[in-house]
Image 1 (cartoon, rainbow, N blue to C red):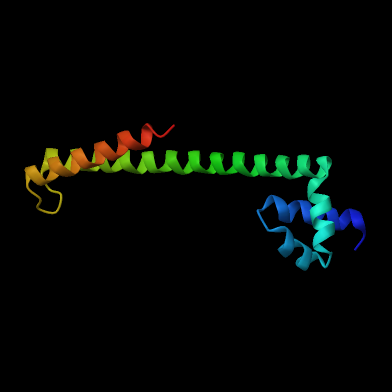
Image 2: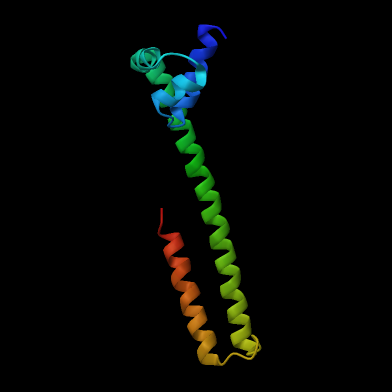
Length: 115
């Protein structure tokens, strides 16, 4: 592998949080070389940029997951409401249904207040 390719691999591995000694071993370079590359401003900038992109992707995925959880919780609350109105949710008492509704509404509020 040429130096540019090794440095690119170094950047990817380092941005994933891998330790310098482990990167050096994986890329078959000396730990001193890994330490020297890690100190180079242009490499640090590239590592930082990858980490920032990864963080943004995680945030985006979390928001999607949160929206899906809110949708599921809302649907469940609607089912509970329907069951309360018909009192047919597997023979639960109205008291039990109201308790379930309060629990789900609380969880829904907590989900909506995360961001």
